[in-house]
Length: 251
Image: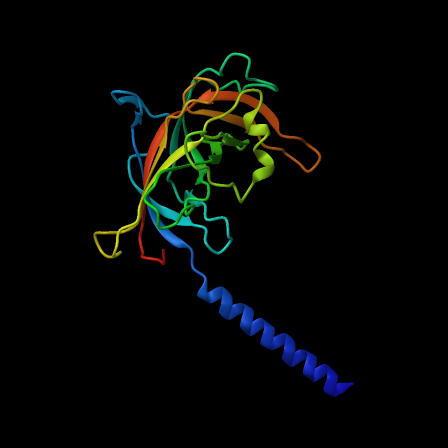
């Protein structure tokens, strides 16, 4: 019995060491994220439109591509006093299934994170693709948490699968389709200082088959395990950002 116990203890210790070593080898990819005050609308000729999602005046480096979780999402997670600036217009007519917040429309400083889904889709290719995006946030002075989802598709481009939260996709396309974001990747060869992987992320797509620009669906998140999310309407919220890797990786 004692020998068996010692053997089991050794085996558990060995597994712990192996797991710890595997975890140490996995590193997410650090990023620099720049949000722009205007976004390009891909019309002929292209035009500019004011961005509804902007920075507080600087770049963000509290951001990573989530390699270790397997989602490959580019997540910008705020820390300290940093904020995003969100501008909500009035909701799209007929889009509110629950209740729109009383603070809409308006421009607000918010805390939380912005997530560009599966940004390593077609890794190593410089061809554009469509993907999904979202944000979970709170407004300054308000502890209520909201979730914003851009979960649409493009028929004319490859669409990256949403690995992280596919169950939210139907609700984020109700009652109208929401919009995807378009990613324009640049994978330099070779990668090195001054030539790092970059992704231009442009949120100015229509909500096909609709024509509203860059539609996002807002939900008030559940306040407890028995409370459902509240559908808070759909909004046109164009934006544009550049994401740059801060270290090289295999592609």
